Each structure stands twice: as C-alpha cells, then as structure tokens.
Length: 54
Ligand SMILES: [Zn+2]
Image 1 (cartoon, protein in one colour):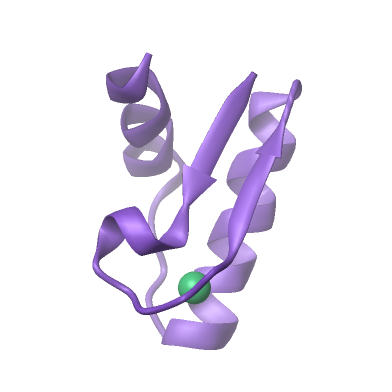
Image 2 (cartoon, helix red, strand yellow; image 1 turned 45 degrees about the horizontal axis):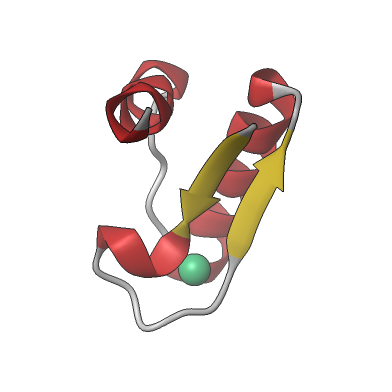
C-alpha cells in the first residue's frame, strides 16, 4: 500500500493520502498540496517519497 502523510513533509496538517493504487495516491496528494499549501510536487518527486518509505 502507498501512503503520503502531509505532516511528514513539514506541514501542520492531518491530511493522509493512501491506497493500493500508487498513481491515485500521488494524484490525491498533489491536488491537496497544491490547493491547501500552494506547493506543486512533481509526480516523480512524490513517487520518490513513497518509494523511500518502502
Ligand atoms: Zn496538507
């Protein structure tokens, strides 16, 4: 399962994107970070975040 925890990236935020479909998790998180934090991560960067966590 893929998981992106907003708090892990320096935000005081309880948003968590998770699921079995990595592509969906990435889309969900990038939408959230752009809308809520004004930061647009590239898909490649988010993929690296997920892969590094194992
Ligand atoms: Zn957030």
